[in-house]
Image (tube, rainbow, N blue to C red; front, side, top):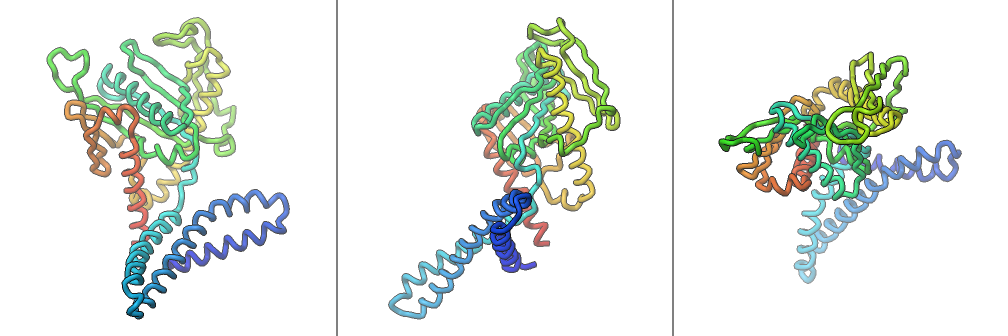
Amino acid sequence: MSLPARLDRLLTRAEEIRHTLETAPGAEIGALSKELAELEPLVAKVAELRAAERARDEAEALMADPEMRDLAEAEWLEQKERVPVLERELRLLLLPRDAADDRSAILEVRPAAGGDEAGLFAAELFRAYQRYAEGRGWRFEVLDYDESDLGGVKGATAEIAGRGVFARLKFESGVHRVQRVPATETQGRIHTSTVTVAVLPEAEEVDVQVNEGDLRIDTYRASGAGGQHVNKTDSAVRITHLPTGIVVAMQEEKSQHKNRAKAMKVLRARLYDAQRTAADSARAADRKSQVGTGDRSERIRTYNFPQGRVTDHRIGLTLHKIDRVMLGEFDDIFDALIAEDQAARLAAEAA
């Protein structure tokens, strides 16, 4: 369907909803209001486009008048350049949205290859995400932080709450590689270590039905560096989802009930992510048109400290400001990833 036809259909639907809301029963008002709210930005953008097209055409007609030609030509050139920009913005708005984009997210960071150095970098990367979240006004709640003896982590999990968190962070899932000279290295050799990151859309209970009979719940004494409750009470909780084999363990809180609630939140997120991954696999062609595959084994980025650079391998982006990135300044990377994903999806639609 051509863009003008799609826009006409969109405007017609918005008008239909407005009329229906005048007489709609209470049970339907919520869903219709939500649909209209989602259409309003598109309607406003269509109005901009149509106004620009009219101004362009009127200016073109006025160019036949010698007295108006200079002014009309300037207006015509301005609107001629503006129309395709507005058309592209509309095509982006019309792209199918990920249903999870507006959600909060669960962030998991774990060391992979590299021993203690991987654990140290995992802790630094976790803090960098925390700074980024705080800079955007999102709530960053640590759900679990299993600290190692050297100050690194064996694993760290957080809930990042806010509108559009998942849309912003979803391309972070994958393997992050670090190259640097560890503090414990006496001969100045550069070591390569890896950390895995998973960003999962937060799931509500309505998204994933968890049968209590499918769960094995174990309690045990917490372990690790720090914490007065460590090794004193059976406050740590391990939940195993028997049908899938997914295991979630929590020990951050002193309360067993709080640890169980946090573990269930992460379990629901993992189950919801598994459902989404299965659906994506069924749309394999669509997945290939997008930047983020979500494959946890995919090496996506390298942090090279001696050279002061961060390279995202998926889009060939290199930034020579590693210190700023580790302070949570990820926007240049995230903006480029989102733009590349949008361009790929626009190209797929046009094909």
